[in-house]
Image (cartoon, rainbow, N blue to C red):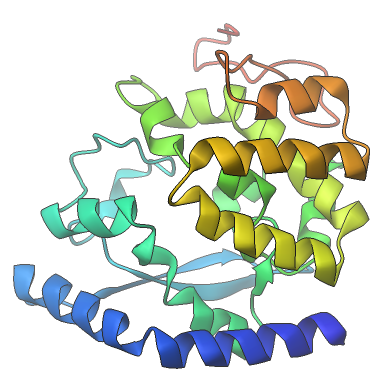
Length: 247
């Protein structure tokens, strides 16, 4: 109940304070091709089913028909305005409305498409036991996800091999240890991350140690080395490519 009250108050305040930026983004996106500035798509909801998640549209119309769920920084579907709002993380601002409606929370595992959640292991299914969030620990650690996937011949495969396993571990850690104080810290660090990635990652290390994260997870989240491939939580093997070969 306290978390929901926190979300309602903060989302209402956010929608009011950011209304000039919201209106400007709406205008710029609409002017580029005279179509809706919003992208509304189903995402996996808490407890099952889906909800209509809203974002600022950063891609060309009908970009989702390609069947590719992961987006690299150099994805040709991203528009000129879209590159700017994605870089500034403004594309997520309309999700304040989803938070206000109770479909999302400020902090929680990032909402995923059902094509991906259908692949979840039994352990990963626990990520759906809480409301999905605008931000979480992985949003800070993998804020450069688009750059990681850049130039990959198969962004979805690479995501499932070197990002999903660690994101899921971080999400499960949040499910087990979440609190209002932790939410406040992560919201602040999300803002700090926009200005100083080094400071935010250093602060994440302290939080992970307080939450009892494994040494391996802490090491990966320092982001000072290449991301290692790993099986998702609860799985025995690394995700394989279409030819059945783990890479």
